[in-house]
Image (cartoon, rainbow, N blue to C red):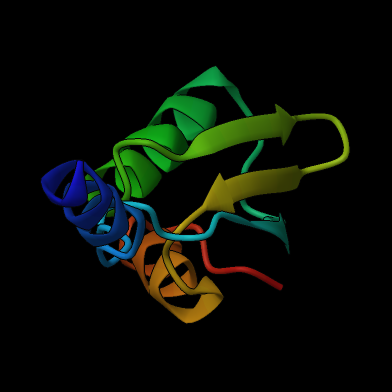
Length: 87
């Protein structure tokens, strides 16, 4: 019985995995995003930084919303390098 309790206690207090990063919603205004090709390029650039990112694009409003575990600055750099610098 004592070994069961010990195993339970050890299991209960194990550290949280680093893969469980917190996801944050980021919003960007992209004035240069005007068409379907732009939308695909923006999506590709963001997924290169965070493959698990949830991306929502409002093309007429030129608005991008990204739920990601990456910091906003890293996403902004990826967008700028792809030719779509945030306003």
